[in-house]
Image (cartoon, rainbow, N blue to C red; front, side, top):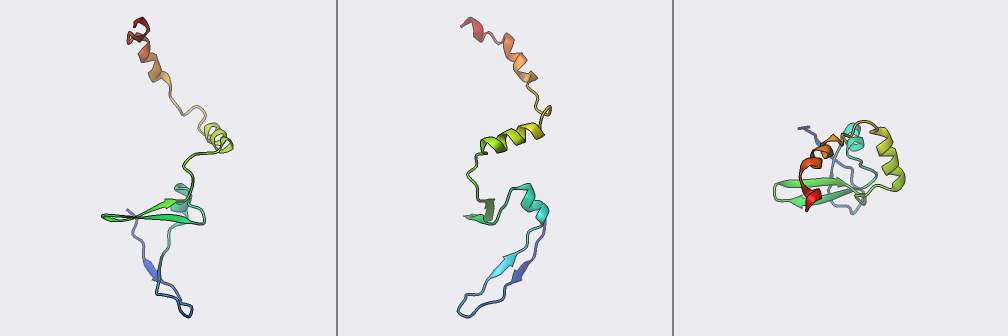
Length: 88
C-alpha cells in the first residue's frame, strides 16, 4: 500500500474548494494513466482507472508480443493430447 497526501488547490474566483491527490509517476506509468482518469465510487472508497478502451490496437498488441517474446509458456496444451476428446 502506498500512502499519499491530499493537497489543497488554489481557488479561482467562484470556484468551489477542491483537493488534489499527487500520484507517483511510476504508478501512473505502470497502470497506463494518461491525461484523464475515470473515478468510480465504490462502497469502501474510490476506484481510479485509466481512460482507455480496454483493447490494444493492432500496433500495441504486436509491440506487447515482441516485448514478451519467449516469456509465454504454451506447453500446458500438450496435456490435452491425452484427454480423449479426439475420440468423441
